[in-house]
Image (cartoon, rainbow, N blue to C red; front, side):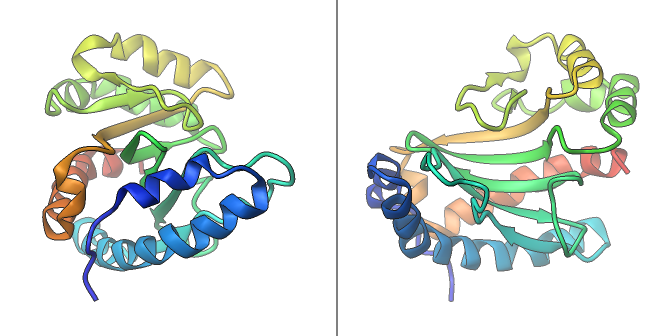
Length: 203
């Protein structure tokens, strides 16, 4: 089975009121698509990286009141979990799809990774200009790399416990590429290919 694309219906999931109702819609509408996308990308990333990678689909298990504003799949080198490891993400907010190489606050060696990136800053500066950076995976906002002080972002990631570093691309919910599963998968694959050298630097 190949991925057939995302629809407006998928993004409308995040307008559903109530934790249980929204979670049910995420499970019915989005997670089956994540499984198809994730199975393919996990194989691709295992080949690119030269190490077995594992798919994780967000369960939002810690939530008891507030419905999630986004949902995602993660691919990491650890079978049991991804949050304490550098990982790749594909996910949705109501407004866009995000494609990330993610280093989130639960990483035990955040400061070491930040130092490596600061010493190899050109690896980030030379990325395509449509790539974006976020310092908080819970927020929609991200900024293009040529509009950011990357050194300051990495220093913040190094020094502030809750600070994060996510780098990748956004695709607007209205972008026609989302309706074409093949084109979308090619775009995500090329994005990850571009980010793999950065991932390898972090190990």
